[in-house]
Picture 1: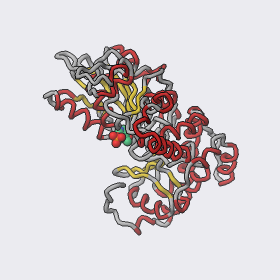
Picture 2: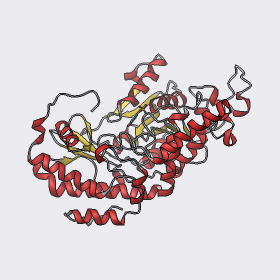
Picture 3: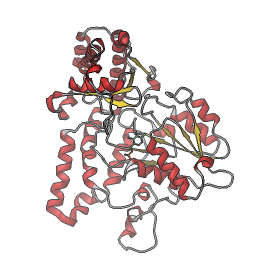
Picture 4: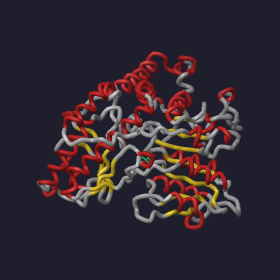
Amino acid sequence: MANKDFQPGIEQARALDQQDVLGKYRSRFFPLTDNKVYMDGNSLGLASIDAEKALLKVMDVWKKEGILIWNVDNGHYFNYGKNLGNRVGKLINAGENEVMITANTTLNIHQAIATFWRPTKERYKILVDDLNFPTDRYAIDSQVLLKGMKVDEVVKVVNSNNGVFIDEDAIIAAMTEDVAVILLPSVLYRSSQLLDMERLTKEAHKRGIYIGFDLCHSIGAVAHNFEAIQPDFAIWCNYKYLSAGPGATAGIYVNKKHFDKQVGLSGWFGNKDETQFQLKHQFDQALDITAYQTGTPNMFSMAPLEGVLNIYEEAGMENVRAKSLNLTAYMMYLIDTRLKDYNYSYSNGTEDAKRGGHIALVHEEAYRICLALKKHNVIPDFREPNVIRLAPIALYNSYEEVYHLIETLELIGKNKEWNDFSNERAIVI
Ligand SMILES: *Cc1c(COP(=O)(O)O)cnc(C)c1O
């Protein structure tokens, strides 16, 4: 539960930092050049000492062992995707061997749809929302086209009625008999809305529909309980909150009740271990999450995850979620009390159960305010047309940094500092 008893001065920020049980993990992450205040860990988490160490270790093993790397530590690296998957799985309370670290998010969506969407004459639709991140739609649409079907006949879109939140009742109402598969975000990347995944999954299953979630904006921030939710599948990237490095290998969860399903996209690393090196031309599919791997694990993109998971395991996912909620509650309090006069507002939910790890600050000058923030050594994240995403990360951001951020936003508002910048968009914003 987030604290409700916030006070205006910087003294409280300092006191909260003093009492913070996760404060000690800040020193495990590298400070940025010029000690920038980083509020963009929901796009790319920061590098940690542990991540660097794990990466250098893989380099060292390769250096010393060559091809024998596959045998080192009882096949640890041969089974790297599954070994890391089991550790990430604990963060969402998934079962043993239900998570694989492999590919990227987009490819894992292709994999999930190719596996779970087997259209029949009666059940052929894929249900989505209109606020999810676009790559999810691109992947789904191309799967539909690959089957020679028409996107507008197959993909059923539940539209948000305000462009900010998804109405869960509207999604449930759209679960008609012709729907085969549903893909939804756990947390919306713009408004931070956290969906009631357990309720949606129950409703889908009542109607015989498969349901999966994109956890990109919740993995490492929200302590999901997959043993209770029991979705059919999930996919995510590991480079946002989880801080496993730029382009880190992604994750896929498949509920063990589906391990008898023929995997949609197969490759030799999805074969049973026992027969993989017989190199037969007939695929002998592994009967667990291994099946969802295609080729050789890209180890340098996985090693930093192995390192940063040490920090997560020491810190505890429940503590991470509790601090994250309190940091964002504190931020909302400061926005309410200090920024209202300068036309700032936020479009995320205020209830703990309905928000992820970031605040969606709204201002008509959002783009140029982001440029001004960067000039003040604060790194935010902009999303068209008017949202500044601010993610204080439980493992390395402090209450004092949140306070400093709000002070800076106040100053920018007071002096209309956006007038110093151009509105022309850069490529990566
Ligand atoms: C970040 C993000 C992705 C990223 O996909 P990649 O294939 O890993 O680049 C996909 N979906 C959502 C919802 C995201 O937030």
